[in-house]
Image (tube, rainbow, N blue to C red):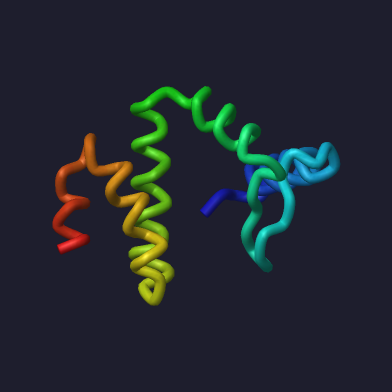
Length: 92
């Protein structure tokens, strides 16, 4: 979990993105891009090794903190699996 200074930085960044209407609230604790092109552009700017790492982190969070949502974790396990083969075993 992020400490207070890091949390403030994240909250500030999210607030700025919402203010600029780049992201929108999707669910009580979830945000999404306001347009598919914005999401695709942002995703494309992340280098593949970093993307895999981020997908693994999301998958592990779902796996450890939200065991009731394996369907939501599965795509992240698959996208993060290239650099971490053990994630495939989670899906079988």
